[in-house]
Amino acid sequence: MDRNGKRNLMIEKLFEACMWKTRFLVLFAVIFGLIGALVLFVIASMDIYAMAEYAFKTIITHAHPQDFHEDIVGGIIGAVDLYLIAVVMLIFSFGVYELFISPIDHSEDAKEDSKILSITTLDQLKDKIAKVIVMVLVVNFFQRVLHTQYNGALEMLYFALAVTALAVGLFFLGKVGKH
Image (cartoon, rainbow, N blue to C red; front, side):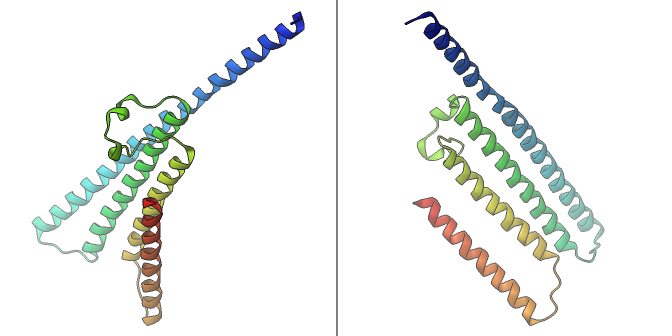
């Protein structure tokens, strides 16, 4: 091999080494994804605490404000929505780390059936995130339904059709996940 061939080979190896190290850029997504998840877990927990405090004050004072039940259930469902979004962030962070950096050692010790955060392909990551996002949308739908006023049979029929469509969609989503 001549001198130019060796130099080109060295440049190629240096370029490939630099390119390979750029995968560590995903650590920004991992770190900030984990921070986002933590923030959402804290906010959702604070919302649940506020709902519990409101409920206990209402019980102690024997007051029964208008829309009390809807407010409590809506607040708790809103917190569940935040928890689910936090879970999306966790799954995303774990998945990106395992795909681009390294398998997480602690997950290797877990039983095969409990490796919910173990992700080996981009398709697995997309599937897990998609399923949780669908659940977020379902929870959000029911939170909005709580505060909806129905003015007639046609609107109730639309509501029933929407719930049926949601149930059918969840049924098929569950079928896809098992095969």
